[in-house]
Amino acid sequence: MPAPRPLQFILDGELVSIPEPTATLTVLQYLRDVAGRCGTKEGCAEGDCGACTVVLGEAAPGGAIHYSAINSCIRFLPTLDGRELVTVESLAGPDDTPHPVQQAMVDQHASQCGFCTPGFVMSLFGLYLNRSDPDRAQLLEALSGNLCRCTGYRPILDAGLAMGSYAEPARWSREDAQSAARRARLEPLVSAPALVTGDGCYFAPKNIEQLAARYAAAPDSLLLAGGTDIGLWVTQGLRELPPLIWLGEVRELRRIRADEQGLWIGAGVTITEAWPALLQHWPEFAEQADRFASRPIRNSATLCGNLANGSPIGDSLPALLALDAVLELRCGEQERALPLSRFYIDYRKNALARGEFVTGVRIPHRHADDQVASYKVARRHDQDISAVATTFRVRVMDGVVTEARLAYGGMAATAKRATVAEHQLTGRPWTLASIALAQAALPADFQPLTDMRASGEYRLRIAAALLERFWREMNGEAVRLPAAPVAAMEQES
Image 1 (cartoon, rainbow, N blue to C red):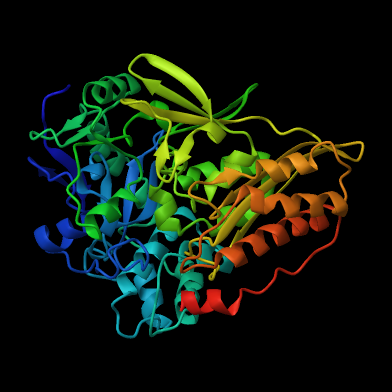
Image 2: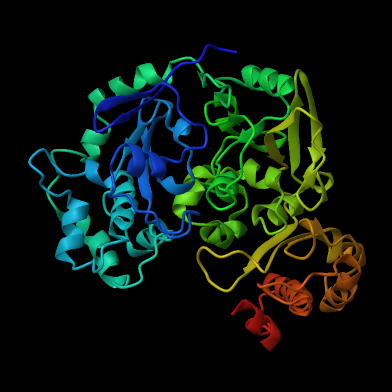
């Protein structure tokens, strides 16, 4: 393992070097308690409200710098190594002239108490750097992780629509964000050896060989990908974590490729990067992609992290179960492939051997006769956990179902396929009568629990209704979902 070295990142054009960073110190804690930058606010400390939003710049292949808004409250400070950190204090010009995003917020009266305002500014700033003239839909998507309790969203959206009409600023224009000077400051940091803390509590391997060797030697370590769940273990659960191995520097795991075997997505690929690749082949997932967490969460979280985490309400799990996805695993020098359908053993338990990790997920090419749909049932459209999430895929040839995949989340201790219901469909005509047989079989597949999101009875009803909806939509019809029972509504409130 490489020798310990300081954590290094860029802030306001200057190199910040921290000799002994604490592995689980969050970026928010560093900004407020160490750097004295209190513009970044702490609201929920769990990545839900957006008050803590900052922007990260990262050198991308080809020489460009990629900027993304993230939640600083659940992002560990050492993961900033080799990157540029931008906070709300960074935006003003040399003579304290407000940035166009800030001026637009002022001119559109988009702030009242002001607590959430820095987070909105940073989310808009991230969009500003990536899009010259965003429309309303793009603004809504960019702000999906920011909550405001007093101003209301209309003037904030107006500010977003107006920010591109101001003169380019001297600092943090789109041209300045990609300047040779900024790239030159990042280049030596990117080429630095792997970051290791002196206490051994944090290691960021630079390649997959380093990762495999370290994890095989220290299998009690915790693999850290996006950290959007692990961060909560610290900020909400106050847990002491084992040594961390950060996957964000392993370039082999941050690739996406399509070949004769299908689409391959590496374990370090973020949700923001993964969904567009999936949508090229499976456009039916557009709504799921739109409703999958907020933009700052998607900018940190990884698709394979969501799969490895194995939460029964992880929205990507039913989708990839229905597509017969296969996980590629590695332990030391040994590699193997495992169907996702065989990966989950019980609640938060999987089939990984000691020292084994996910390197990527492979999704087979679609068949010309596949019919696919994906649904999410939740209380809110944005930023809400599913009561039931499902993806259906059937292959229909000459009017007969030759293959059926009915995958559900929120119905059991793990996301799983309804294999009994699938059996009722397979080999039968693609008719509503066959759907009724599959619906009747669902209680044999699932005995869902009642919790704050829905009752078990409602979950079964909605699982059956979604299956009928799928058939009707594939046949040019539609169906209304049943309303949640009063009991389920009361539990939610």
